[in-house]
Amino acid sequence: LGQLHGLGKAVKLAKWTVLFVLANQAGVLVVTQLATAAGHASGRDGTGIMAYSNAQLIWGMPQAIITVSVMAALLPRIS
Image (cartoon, rainbow, N blue to C red):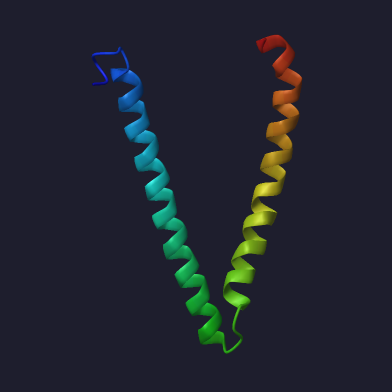
């Protein structure tokens, strides 16, 4: 079907994208379970996933700020 309508390459890329999303979701599930188990083991429910969430925000914020700044500066040249 994809090759009949000239969508063969798009279908191949879509398969990889779906696999990438599924792999990321599997990773999120594992990390969430580990963080929750760590919170239970510490005797304070909710602390494991909360610590992970805060660490992820602290790690991602500088990267997001830098990425947005660089792209805002480069976008006029790109377009």
